[in-house]
Image (cartoon, rainbow, N blue to C red):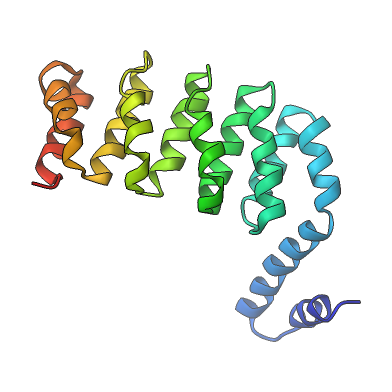
Length: 187
């Protein structure tokens, strides 16, 4: 038995309930890592809900192997699985996953595109301004609204014309986001 497992199992017997709870959560993650091969197989071959459960369970873990497994889910034929995968990658916060997540912006499903914009917006990376600006041309209003929010969070003056356009011609939600963006962007 590994030393890590021994420590976690021992902590389950601690008198303090918070220590027991932390040990149980850590042991669950540890066991998921031990079963990573089987979990990856479920993402590839399981039913939709099973795939999604596994993806979200893996999003609590870190490391390149986990990121690779989640990145493979972005190629799944089911849009709900792809959306879950991109959300989970965003949760990881690993900059190495940015290229795969940016590629998800081009997904034909508005659900996946929305999830990709939301996940990428957590990075607040100025290099994402270009991809986000491209999403302002998307036919789905939900994607455009999320992209406007992401661009506003970056606060780059290069987005000024886009904000002016949406402040004048967008739907009420877009106008509000564009106005907030104009107010908070760099001068």
